[in-house]
Length: 131
Length: 185
Image (cartoon, rainbow over the protein chains, first blue to last red):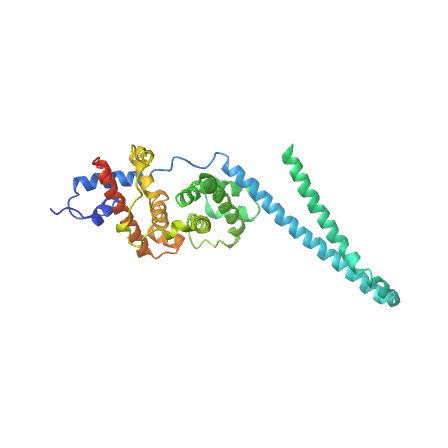
C-alpha cells in the first residue's frame, strides 16, 4: 500500500477519508501538530474583562444619549424662540426689530446651558474616580 | 443554552445584562482572533474591548444572514488587522509570497528553551508566520470555523484559505518533525 502524502495525511487527521498508509514519522509530527494547534493560549483575558467592557459600553451609551438629549434641547429651544418671534410678529409687529437684535443672545442661552452641563458632568466624573 | 436571536433582540431593546451574556459567550473567540495578530497582551486586551464596543454599536445592522460568531469574528479580525497595519507596517511587508522559502529567525538560547514543550514550540513558530497564515490557522483549529466561514470572516477566497492552511501545516510539520527527531535547526 502506498504511503500517504502530506495532503492525504492532513485530510486523514481532519477525519476525512484518505487512501494509503500513513508514514510513521509524518503521522507522529502531524499528530503533535494538530494537538498543538488546537491548544488554547496560555494567557487569556482577565477575569473581569466583561465587567470592564460593560463599564465602557455604558459610558459610551450615556455619552450618545447625552448628545441626543442636548441636540433635542437646543432644537426645542430654537422652535420655542421661533414661535415667540412668530407670535410677536402677528401681535405686535413693531416690537419685532428690537427683539431680533437679541436673537443671538437668546440662541446662546441653550448653548451655554449645554456647555456648562457637559463640563459639570466631566468634573463630577473625574471627582468620582478620585474618591 | 445561548440563544443568539433572543439575546440579540434583548440587547436591541436596551438590556445590558443580555449584552454582558454576549461578551462572556464570545470573549474567548475575540481573544483567539486578536492574540495571534497582536503580540502585546495589553494591546490585544484593548482591541478586544474595542471589538465589543463596535459590536454593541453595530448590532442593529446584524441581520442573521450569517452566524453571530462569524460576524463577531469578522469584526475582531478587521479591528486587529487595522491595528497591525497601523502600528506594525514593517512586519506585513517582510514576508515572502512563497512560504516554502520562508526562513524562521535564528533562534536565541531563550527561544530554544521554549522548545521544551511541543505546544510552545508550535506557538513560537506560528508567531513568525505571515499574518494571513496565522489567522487562517487560528480560525480553523482554535475557533473551529469552516473554510467557507473563514472566507466570510477574512474576505479571502475559499481556495486560498485551503491553500494557506495546507502550506502552513506542511511547513510547521517539517519543522516539528526535525524538532521531534532532536535535530534542532
